[in-house]
Image (cartoon, rainbow, N blue to C red):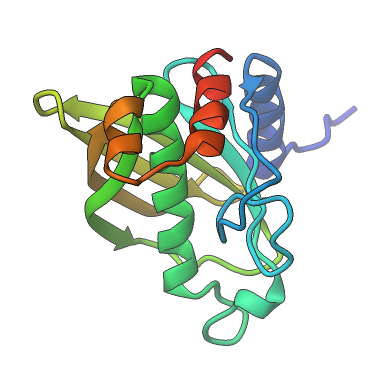
Length: 181
């Protein structure tokens, strides 16, 4: 009797499920309108995040209204997903408030709307007390890397972020929840 073939896509899905089981969810806030992660922004990506304490992940499916050419996701949306995953990775892993300073993106393969994608963000390097180099990877359902980014982020303590007007008390409370997860 022949065994049925299991596709790479099926294996990738099983690995993604196993990874997610080993991870913990990061809390989000329903009081902001961020295009990338707000659960109340009907036009946004509504990304959710989870971590294994060495990287941050998000499973995202981009809806049709955010396409570029034909059935491809617009490059600006791919950039947003990568910026968002790297930001959340920096916030959670470094326990700091972040702002993107510089971002480089490689568009490696076409990425299609209405297909499941996995975003992964991690810290590559700390440059002193105020800057971090991050990496973001966006993979398709077959596990192929489609888009990759590195970025430099300015990092701030909560006190400095408040003093500079980057974050108000409500956002600092949310930040504290993430750090205590």
